[in-house]
Image 1 (tube, rainbow, N blue to C red):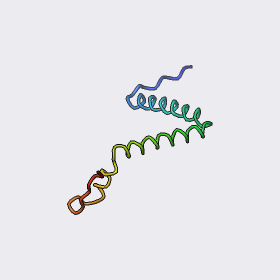
Image 2: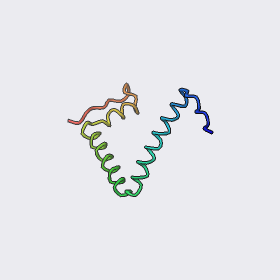
Image 3: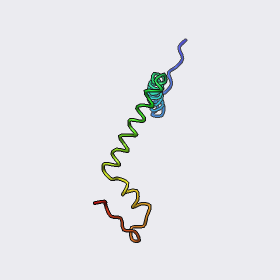
Image 4: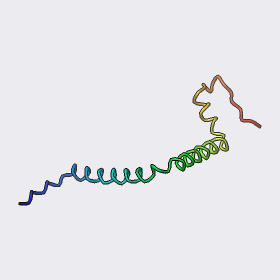
Length: 79
């Protein structure tokens, strides 16, 4: 005797999609776990690119403007 199929509700559709995406994500995590050294190298390379972008665009001035009140502090760019 077959059990009746559950009613298709929007919540069950969202739950099914979330479950499918979660399984795919977990699969990618499981595949990348043995490559610890390569992941650290990749993380370091991305951090280096990010810091290089800040230095080349002189982005630290944006952060300094947030830290200090610009009416009391005059910040000039290096010549």
